[in-house]
Image (cartoon, rainbow, N blue to C red; front, top):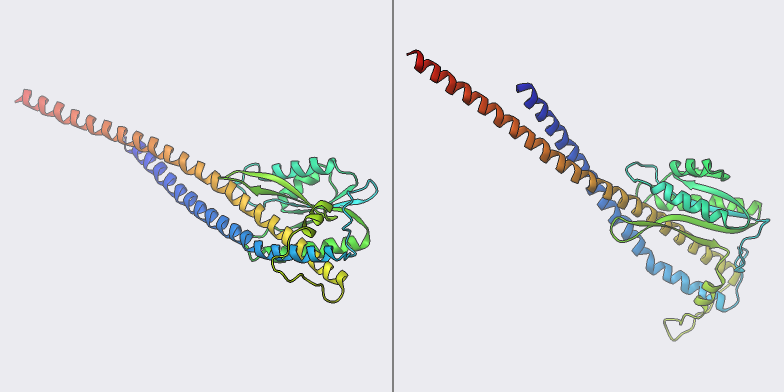
Length: 296
C-alpha cells in the first residue's frame, strides 16, 4: 500500500508542477497577444495619415517607379511572396494552414512565384511543396523585433526587384478572429490596386484647406508607397504573432483543463486507496482485539 500511495503522490506532484508551467505559459501568451494587438491599433492613425498623403499624390496625378498601374501579374513575370509562420511549438496547425493557403493561392496566379519564408517550419513546408524559396527569415520574439525584420524584408525585396521586374508582391499570414480562432489571409502589396487608389482619391480631406504636394511629386509618392509597404508588412507580422499566441493560449487552456481532470482522478484514487488502507488497519486492530479477548 505504501508504494502505491507514494506512486500516486509522485504523479500528483508531477501533474501539479506541469500545471504551473502551463499556467505560466498561458499568462505569457495572453500578455503577448495584448502587446501585438496594441501595436496594431497604434498603427491606425499613422496608416490614415499615409493614406491621405497617397490620396493627395494620386489626386494630382503623381506616378512613381514602383509599379502602380493596377494591372495583375502576367505569365512571364515573377511573383514575390512573403509568408509569415511560426518557429515555436504548441500552435497546432498554424504553419500548415498558412502554408497550404499560400500554395493554393500562388498556384492560381499567373507568373513564377519567388517566396521568402518567415519561420523555419513554414519554410520547410513550402519547400516540400516545390515552391522556389528565396530566403529564410527569423520570426520576431517581441514587438520591438518586428521593425528590423520588416526593414530587412523591404531591403531584400527592393534588391531583387532592381534585378528584375516583379509583376506582383503578395504577403500571406494568419489573422486573429474572435476568441482563439484565426484565418489565413493574403494581401497584394504591389502593384497597387486601382480600385483602392481611386477610393483614396475620392476621400474628402479632413480640413477646408486642400493639400498641396511640395517639391517632386514622384519622390513624395515613392516615400509614401514605401511607408505604406512598411505598415502593411508590420501589421501582417503583428497579426501573425497575435494569431500564433492565441493558438498557443487555446492549447494551454485545453492542457490546463486536462490536467485539472487528471488531478481530480489522481486525488480520488489516492483518497480511495488511503481510505482502503485505513479500513484494513482498523480491521486488523479489531480482529486482534477480539482474538486477545477470546484468549483471556
